[in-house]
Image (cartoon, rainbow, N blue to C red; front, top):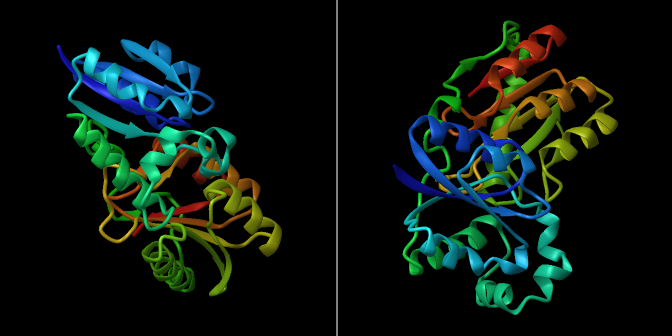
Length: 267
């Protein structure tokens, strides 16, 4: 049986990958980040090692001992942890980040990839085995936008692409061609909640990939929790980038969106 390594962060993405890898007859060895990865991972992989962020160096010896040469990253590490005591006080992490030009996600992950390669590990595309979860272009819900709504969606798409180019975030909220909110370190769900308070409903959210998105890390992800948060905030539409956004629990999410009248499109 082929073996593959999994570096597991938060939410459902790592679980989805582990299930898909098993269906492909792969043995999965996971390095799970404490405080981020779900305990449910244990039942979906062949082995799991739980590491604090400050122990990140251990994953190289773990994968080597397990005979792993190919790994994937799935799930986010909460951005606020960049400022945690574990990171700030750890000499090995400081050494990893030493000399980088900034603390943008792409810059940090590029440095991590170099370190993985130095240790003989090849980082694969995050969507390995789950390519079917990347929606193609089109309206995904039963309800479609009208012509004026399409104008606002495309307005939001262009804005989202602009902030993604600057590596500020990948998501914007708009209403009547006004910018309601731009994503920062708080993440998409918090952006939606904030937008709901500002716009008092009736807004749209658009999430995109970065220019020349490296599909090995930090790809855009939406799912059932995103849809629930949008509904609670009284948003009217979610726009995602076709072929580059992972849609977890898509069928269940679309059923709920149809029930509540939320429009979802892939651009």
